[in-house]
Image (cartoon, rainbow, N blue to C red; front, side):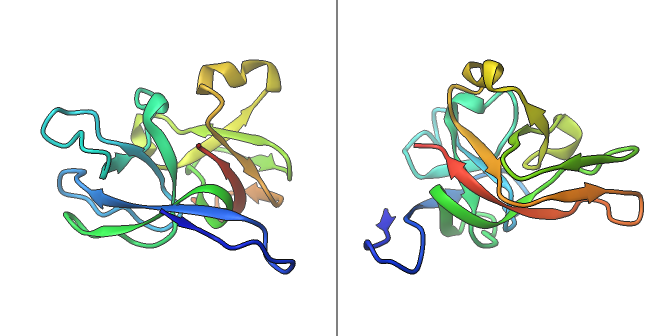
Length: 152
């Protein structure tokens, strides 16, 4: 675990080291990451892409690309420069302060939509807050946005 020292120029951030055990795919920068829950990989280091079904194991947002069976950093608390947003059909706008939730099963690892504060308990109080504003259009699919990760 990497805990940034207190300073006056950067926001505090906690990063953890995980091992990508997600079958045949890489964990790319900005993807939501969950601890693996299968018996052979449930060691506190094995990680897979974030899904609605694994929300209880959400541990953060990948801070770098993590190849299959390799180790890499995940931001568990604090600012993440890149958070992957799900591709959508149509248009929507995410504004600063919106609470992001995991995308559907076709965009595993991505975040989508916004969640009302009243529904945060469905995410077990582990979520990402949008730290910018972006509009998704057909010419700008699957964009990235910065965010504040709250997974501890």
